[in-house]
Picture (cartoon, rainbow, N blue to C red):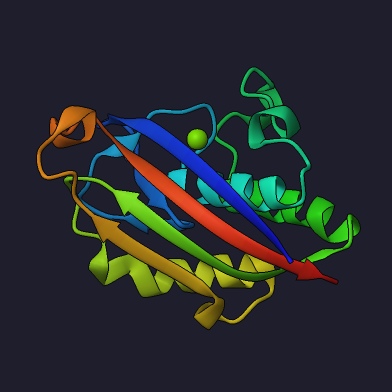
Length: 157
Ligand code: MG
């Protein structure tokens, strides 16, 4: 069994759509980034890569690489997981915490779990997503951006 942790943060960019966990959330400010800025997918990708000791998302998919401009981060997650599987590991479960003052994510959590589970070929029961605010403190509290922490466990495949 292996455990990996991933962290990601992105600034809000009102000119972009908000995409989290492979799900477009209408009526909310988007996130700045080279790819589609899906911070949930990015944190989970790093948790998977970390558990398998395969580096990190920035090494696999450099953010100065034109190929990854506006990239679908669910696709990048899937590609990273293929490396993890090739190294002899399978996802057991993942637990994700999103820290943001807005928008309310609860109505979208089940759709996100479904999308991530499909990409990783596990049951949605294996993917947990929790959302909380930062109680008004710091850059998250000021509404400048969001942060995501993900933990994943891998079992020998
Ligand atoms: Mg990111």
